[in-house]
Image (cartoon, rainbow, N blue to C red; front, side, top):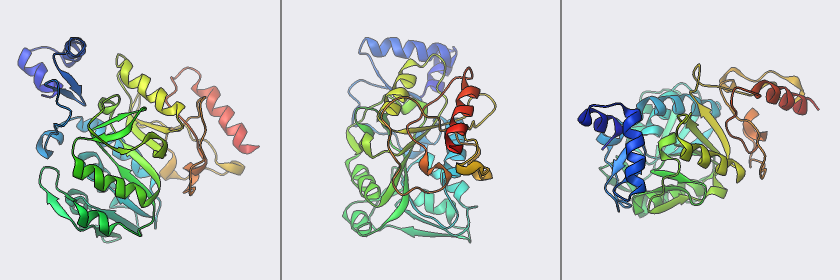
Length: 311
């Protein structure tokens, strides 16, 4: 059940329900999932599209808005299946010269009338629960493909295992999508952080960037997971927060202004292992391990980053 539905049934606030769900999980009575909870032992359970489409809708919208800024005109990318990637696809319809390879009927439908975007679909067998093409046909159609970056979602994300999903066929196709891309961008709302599911799709060391939303102040698990991911070299871009999508970009190398499409990113270096992004790809290509900074000290951090770039 979703937290919203639980709050309606017991006639209390979602904040109270979230606290109670944490307590029940500690007692082994249920397992928390993004935006809700399931019976314990539901490692292989997966919600269908109708259920997923009503979970964390505001967060998915904010994530999609921010993730679209990482796509440049004329690029070739792959976009995996999921409700968050479907939201991203709706925004990609405005990017001219774009080529999108996807195994998702929902992504293809969102781009069907974009006359400046070319859509390439994989083969495969239709999996009705999430409107995705899976199986050997989908995987074979991706052999020999090379694109700049892949945008993927999933059921859970941890620093220990990376991105995971509850279905073996979906996981296998996602792994093939990853092999085709120079960079991997994961789209996951804060409710998926710290959640582990059965099949690993992208190990942490292959994730270039995570685009997520601002976790609530009381969600220690999500904040801890974000820091752990940043320590392993994953760049963290956070959408939402106070005043909408936030960005700490500053001038690019040599003092050039950051393009308008890139001004809403928030990629802030933090201590921890640093990793150069393969393939560059726009002004964000040189950014390294990152995570959220609080409002206090953010101004000083921006000035320091700008000074380093000028040097």
